[in-house]
Image (cartoon, rainbow, N blue to C red; front, side, top):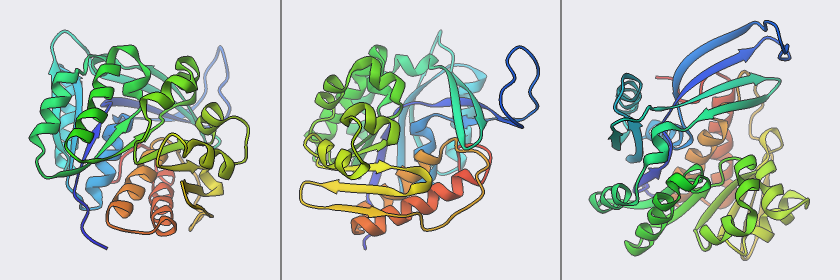
Length: 299
């Protein structure tokens, strides 16, 4: 095992309004909840979990030139994340309302300034990170036409500079809207593609998880299908590895669990861990995430 190189993480910075519901949502009336405002965004969350592992990480993204944007950057910098984040005038920092109940979460999103991330800003940030060895892209950047150019440029710039690459598929709904063929063309030959069970279904159809991972490895060099409490599957072009969860915990809030999983997987894999060990490390961080409210590691 070696120390991982600096990881560039490209994608959304968000304010999360997390409501952990006391029971099913009662339409048209009140539902009691524990409500918390906190930093969010798939890329920002992953970067925070990477920093918590003591690995150097730079977040590339965009916020509004507003109090929320300043707060989000302050939080990230205090957690050890280097921020190459553009402050966009006349734009608000993105916000997501998260309704969490029964081990699931539903998100109502306003991406705000994240839609204004530009290819030029990404190019400058990648060029400035001379010690980076890997680039991880949140696919939210690809799934919206407003930021797609920045996401595509991030992958191209990483390849030009010899960085390895990974993509988190982000969300099943937007994947359906853009279509599996377009998405798989955008991420073709990335070194690692992460998908959850729903995203795997959109991209590979109704196969079992191992078969889905193998099918998707025709596009990406390595694929991980995240299965929550059922574990995870890794497939590359020569082998398939499945693991069960290494620990079981009481689920409080699943917000950010996939982002923590991605951080554990990347830091272990880039340090030289074999697939099974990397998946186990990823599962450990995912378990930490679901046992608390909010998407970031505890300070």
